[in-house]
Length: 334
Picture (cartoon, rainbow, N blue to C red):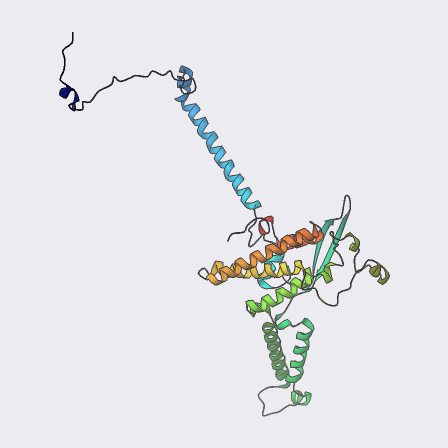
């Protein structure tokens, strides 16, 4: 019979003792995917083979060189969203002169497709060299002739033989000819755009853009794809046919079409980008102005592409101005 314990001893608080449980050991079998197979002697030998190591390095160097070539090709194919691709017409904005030195007229030929098997050659004749103050060649020659008439003394004064004078009649005539040549050269330099400022070149560039992309000129050679009913050339249309096709003749130069505005914005963007790259690196106000001009041109490019549906006007504008998809697709961040 077990001994009896007092009731008070049973109810007394017992001290807390730490009870250690036996540690359990879990044995897991490694899976087939986690285990790394041991290398065979042939693989170990190849890993330390100098010829195999040299081959691997040569393949890696060839792949890196090929990657550099591909990256350079991709970088060349991607156009700058601000400047675009360099074209002769874009370079002419810097001097506000026609393409080529000394050219009096420029003939730009475009080959535009109007369907399967059909091609049309569009030729646009641009005006010759521009001068400052909107002076034409005839006005400049008239001013030179007028200055010669004012500076030429009477014939009696040139032919008289004055013994008190130190010049003979031949010397006086030669001196007058030299002075008139100097005056003619001075007038030519004053009227030259090479001595004008950026504002003078901007004015001439705006006039060139209107003459190049204005629909009063391009309607003669380019057609509208978005409106098939007005697909005939205005220059070849008779008054009866023009009335039948609902062609409204223009009363002056076209200054508001999308192509003209895009060209004018491109000229301003190029001038402002050149300034910010060279002298205005800290000009924050003009950086904001450049951003506004670029996004305004992007909206006009999207509108022109949507309206013309990739037709002749869109091709003419993008090829002359060097505008790529980066200038009108997606988001432009400067």
